[in-house]
Amino acid sequence: MPTLEIRDLHVAVGDKEILRGVDLTVGAGETHAIMGPNGSGKSTLAYAVAGHPKYTITSGAVLLDGEDVLEMSVDERARAGLFLAMQYPVEVPGVSVSNFLRSAITSVRGEAPKLRQFAKDLKAGMDALSMDPAFAQRNTNEGFSGGEKKRHEILQLELLKPKIAILDETDSGLDIDALRVVSEGINRFRSGDTGVLLITHYTRILRYVKPDFVHVFAGGRIVEEGGPELAEKLEAEGYESYTKASA
Ligand SMILES: Nc1ncnc2c1ncn2[C@@H]1O[C@H](COP(=O)(O)OP(=O)(O)OP(=O)(O)O)[C@@H](O)[C@H]1O
Ligand SMILES: [Mg+2]
Image 1 (cartoon, rainbow, N blue to C red):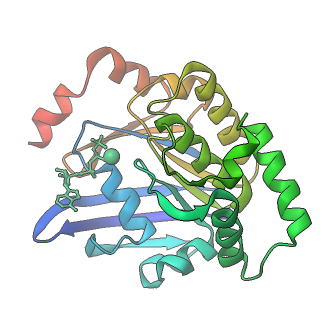
Image 2 (image 1 turned 90 degrees about the vertical axis):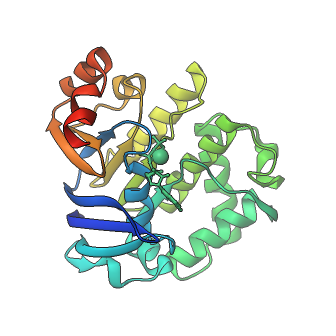
């Protein structure tokens, strides 16, 4: 049963401490939403777990199925089953979506997928996300609209089949139809024994992707936890009571 355990995680950028003791466990089959004000450290948590070199772990632990994630390279983390959909997906000029995805699968599985099977899976994934097949030949994320980039992140999720997916504001900038299509993609993914950590500002997506737990992030740590009803409370009341308390 895949489980991501984050224990008392402290993370700094340069000499600035951003995460100040995060404790969070995402069990198999669970969906956790993280909500919190701008600059509270949500993306920092996502990057630190994924292994971005800019973020220095000053103390704490991250375990995936009991294995020490912090000892792993970025590639090893992906092979172990961790996936991060970035808030701001990067452009990869000169590499088509098709080639990008095939190399990602190759590096995660340790062997290249058979071309015919890959083409079939890619087409099925793109169909499921209502993506124009022409995207397969375009350079990865180059000139993509905001919503197109987000769909491409979910296409990676469909094809890579990780154990734990961290989705950093995958819902931002999506039109109403795209939000539904992307949510359906996330729901297909979480129908298995997988865990989802969904970072979001809006309760909209939580109507489609029902979280089991909601965590409020402020000032680099989790300041409150609850069920889906907590998201509604935040929408009504905002973060002020938390930001004052954590300042
Ligand atoms: N590479 C960096 N250099 C300097 N400061 C950084 C860096 N990365 C993050 N920070 C700072 O850390 C804080 C947390 O940033 P982070 O991106 O994690 O916030 P967030 O909760 O994801 O916000 P948002 O909701 O706007 O996406 C911010 O004050 C940010 O400026
Ligand atoms: Mg962020």
